[in-house]
Image (cartoon, rainbow, N blue to C red; front, side, top):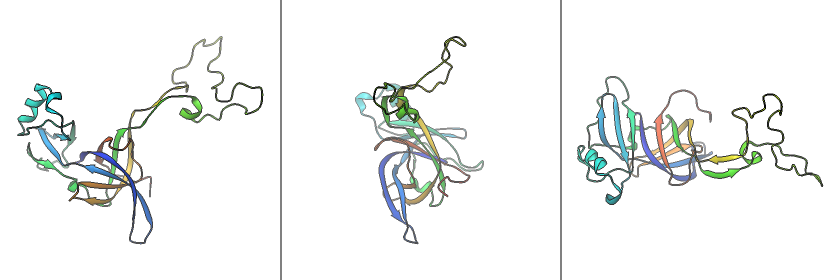
Length: 209
């Protein structure tokens, strides 16, 4: 398996062999039941839905795998290796698929910040902080009036900030607690506490090295 579904529990620190403090994010990863196997793709579930909020089509889909309760979220992953034998429907995939020292990429939905101006949203410097002016946090000129007589696409302007899908790359696994289904990843990951995450294995260098 190449990945798991989990939720963010928060941040803390651990100490390495040399006694240095390492900031880590604690993720509850799995166990994720296998809902469907199709070729080299595996559909995993995480959490549990209330029965009254579960569509009958979804309930019938998970019952084929021997599950009585529909997972809260479903996600598709690829099988690691061409000759690897995929798990069967109904089996559970745990955090044991990861090892300390591996690099992973974590995907989640960032915290929503609501409607924000350009100073907060795009880190503009703002206008003069002197008496009499009214341009303290305004964006300034946004487009020429004559040509092209319109605002160019992609112009950095005030608007909704956060609440978007984001992937943090090259994070290193510091510790794996298989008994409690916990994954300790160095650095911060997107999303609030208890936010849903997707953790996938990744090769290459880490930005924390």
